[in-house]
Amino acid sequence: MHRILVALDVPTAADADRHATTLAGAVGGLKIGGTLFTAEGPSLVRRFVEQGHRVFLDLKFHDIPHQVSGSVRSAAALGAWMLTIHTSGGADMMKAAADSARNAAAKLGTTAPLVIGVTVLTSLDEAAIAQVGVARPLGEQVERLAVLARESGIDGVVSSPQEAARLRALCGPDFLLVTPGIRPTPPPGAARPDDQARTLTASEAIAAGASYLVVGRPILGARDPRAAALALAAEVG
Ligand code: C5P
Image 1 (cartoon, protein in one colour):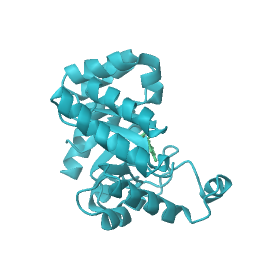
Image 2 (tube, rainbow, N blue to C red; image 1 turned 90 degrees about the vertical axis):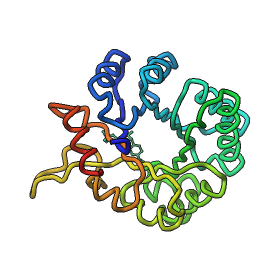
Image 3 (cartoon, rainbow, N blue to C red; image 1 turned 45 degrees about the vertical axis):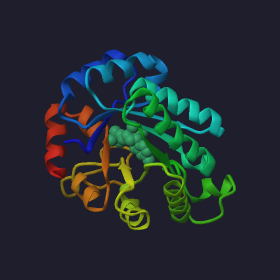
Image 4 (cartoon, rainbow, N blue to C red; image 1 turned 120 degrees about the vertical axis):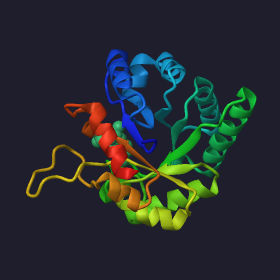
């Protein structure tokens, strides 16, 4: 069950607390993104950490190395278990993040947070990356950034399920691949339930090389979220 991370894409601490209580022990971590963090702040992170949850702080830091280093230090002090940065911030920024995670943990006497890079946002297509000056095919850009992330010493990248097999082959067995876009196998002929277009099932994503699966609506929107989380955990082993 430690491979299933639930995306707490809810607007208030009350909603987040309710889900955290329901899912305690049934998921491997709680992902807090910009919506919830900006509304409820670090106290929510501290509370979850005190309750024994692993917190994945998904704030996608992207700034000069000094500032990212400080952000990672602050996240480590909150007790974040995993956090995200943007790989397009460059090698120096990624090295600063990795160093800061290690140094902060050494000072605090804790384990360093896992630093995970975002490559190309899945909301961008080939035309959109061309607009910001990236001429190569999107898949190649993702691979280039993932390899740069590994060379810069961060722990892994966010990967769509379709990219996982290729990135696993490129980046080796120890690099973490954190994979959203997970959906249960739809019944034959059924329509897609929501806006995730390029999905795999949980067991397919693991077979493709994913290390952790980020799952939101299939858990939070289920009639019995705890049962849904446990079923996914059982599926991936
Ligand atoms: O509800 P759903 O399972 O689609 O939630 C997936 C989570 O992963 C959301 O928090 C979403 O923002 C995040 N995510 C994603 N695709 C990416 C990166 C992050 O769906 N490429």
